[in-house]
Length: 425
Image 1: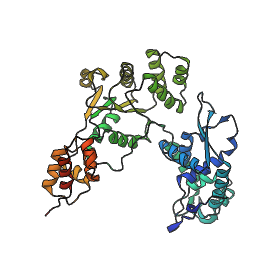
Image 2: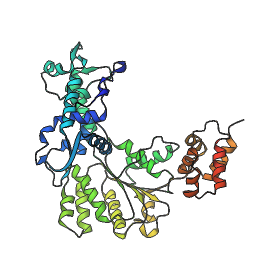
Image 3: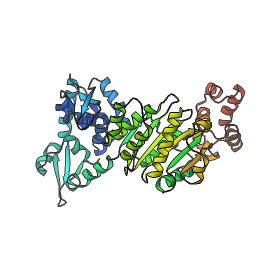
Image 4: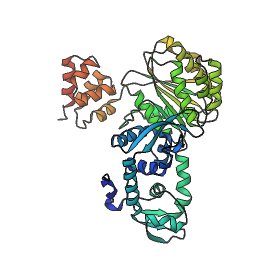
């Protein structure tokens, strides 16, 4: 049975669109021949798929999970060309191949317009473009070059977009954990400006962001990473108090390996006991002149070995002009877990930023209460100190969470919900 592909008929308003999953099917169809081989190309890894369909790397697992649920794709660990470690790779099932072929035939039948080098616009079926140009572009490449109005620019196809796409996906984005990308960003313009100035400047190489739970540290970091994802190689790690130095180094080795640097992976595989000076030498060599941001979320209670590792990474950032270290830390982080002292802040080696609550305007915006009474808003701001998570719970009307998470009494929680509903008179 051929799976239904209703979205292929989505040409409303003259627009030609494929979903992310459909683009992945076309990409995997082009790499179907590798399904039964022992060694696989980079193209069928998560990173290769992200680059080919122009999506963020951390979006790939979700898309693959959906395709596997539909029985279109299966995963396995494979040896990758030029790599020492096996990685997850993805291939079409028989049903997935049938679906992808059906998809390919559908889009090749689209009537599109080709803008020639001389400016002449000619109507073609997508399947005839290669013969007209005497080229052999894949259906996915042709689709990626197609404007929403159904036009392929010959000059752009042969030169511009292809170069632009390579540049766009040339930066590695490695996420160890699930990043919560903010749906909206409120009232943090000054904090963002400070962090960007530190990243782009040449003094502070390590940035430590302090704040309480739910104050918005993770959202702030995600916003920064979003702004730099096409400019820097980015490593993001979500920490827990159970992490060991080796746990972090293993994920860092995978990040380096994705950029073709295998020395750290090989060292960790060969040595159960880590020699800090040797690990530092390997990491320094791997990150040299790479233009990378190493970011860590939820730094709090850590082991001595982890604190020492962060001290070492901070020292590397001082040595490397192109390396930046960004760390989100609880404002209650014990002094014995901190990896630097105040003298390094005074010497402008390390920048500290403490996140406070939102202002009145930010509270009003997050509450989504444009007509709230000014005095009621002031009382909410005073009781919550502009704490974003608390404001979210008020917006949701979640009395139980206000009590359990934020420690309000039932009377206080009920008052906050009441105040949200008081409008201007």
